[in-house]
Length: 362
Image (cartoon, rainbow, N blue to C red; front, side, top):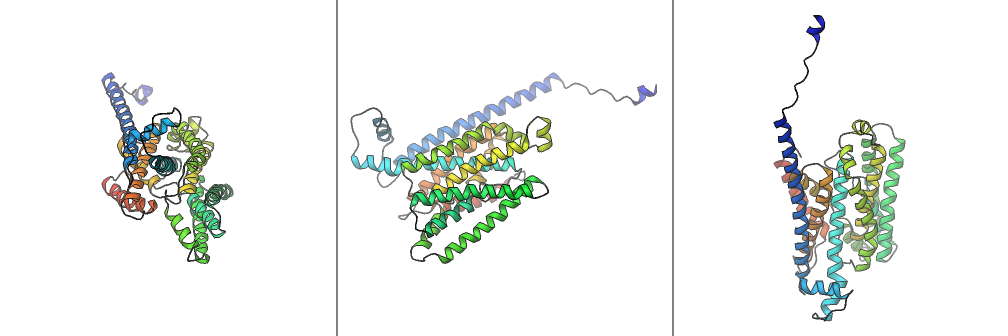
């Protein structure tokens, strides 16, 4: 009798109707997310076509398509030589780079936010951007060419991450918190280094060059820059796309990841290196462009939720479209081009404040 008294009643199985409703809601959310991603892809294509036409020398999308095909299959030339030079030397590489950098920064921001379980994480959380800034500033002081400046910025950016990992491996405490704090400290140190280079730079030549680089711009991008940046960007983005379901596991914590057979530390290192690679490449080519990696992932979360299997591609597509729109404003708003980093800050900061006030769960 005592056993009967102490025995806990068995939980009643969930009704079949409740389970079916749950499956139906999941299917509906999945379908909505797929439609959202498809819509972003269509929007990006439309924006590319519109961007080709925008400018002081408009180029029709049909002519642009013919010029691309003409590189493979000779076609009857219905466009002028000036249009072809403008298309391949200026507008086409600039549009491609805007798409690539926007996608990379948004993907890196989403990856860092999930990996470090921090909604305020951004692509420069570990000091990659400040490391690149210091490398570029030193190269400009040395009178290096544009390609050497980009290469130096990339090397310094990746070296910064190695330094952060070395510091965090020797420190005690929570591994995630220690890594983030090490990134903040190293970033602050390198920021001081950038300030020192600006102090000793020639105010008539070197100082304006450093300042302009720090503000970010796509003005000097050419087709060979796109070709050089494409490989590391593709490698990093492909890695993040392949690891996106594992990032879902990381967001639940290391203990839960271990119970599911996932090596959280190894996955975190791989994701961090991939996100840093695309961040370093982006900053090395275009300079400092902020807010894209912070705002865009949150916008996508509001639309489709926190599932990284869908959040990662959505962030890439939205980031690409966002930076392309901002670059169009940058080159068309005034007679002299506005640095793109200024515009992303003007747009990103107030919009993020709006998101915080509108959505308490953010």
